[in-house]
Image 1 (cartoon, rainbow, N blue to C red):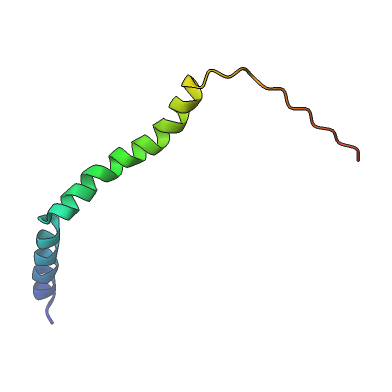
Image 2 (image 1 turned 135 degrees about the vertical axis):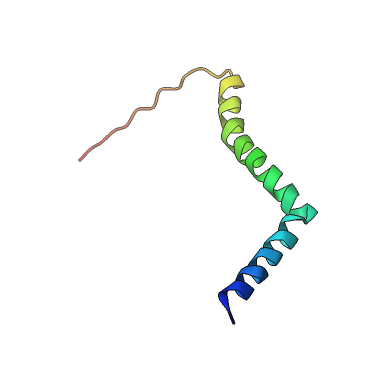
Length: 61
């Protein structure tokens, strides 16, 4: 098979997949979900008004 035909096949497959609603939805939702996974723990720590706790480590070696 010639390279030009392979290029046509790759181009067609790419354009068919990119036009799907699921591809567009996942492309938009993935960065949003990643941002939430990064921000939510820090927001919980920020609004969790607990006092600092002291931890003592005893090393008897």
